Amino acid sequence: MIHFADFGSAWAVIHLFSLFAAVLVRIHIGGRFEGFAQAVFLVCLTAIGLTTVLSYRDCLQMWPLSAVTLAIMIVVAVVDFSSTRSYPVES
Image 1 (tube, one colour):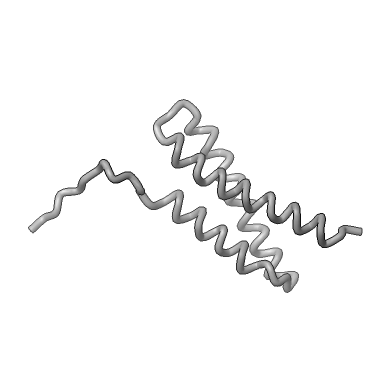
Image 2: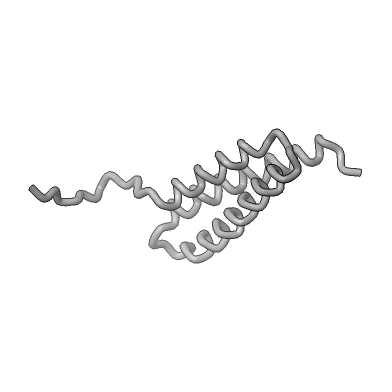
């Protein structure tokens, strides 16, 4: 029998590690470990996606937090946060 405390702990660890993986991808852009960071990120993205769907299916009250984690991971992966690049404005 799985106790809620064990499930909640595992759930929290998966989400925190996934957010860490998203930050890791941004840190290692163009670096030596970029491929590894991307692989870890994609595994975590899949895990969070499955966690969100399974939580929703099982009517757990935590599924919105999984969805927020998934959304944060997608935004961190897609948006360019560097302030050093400038894009020309056409007039």
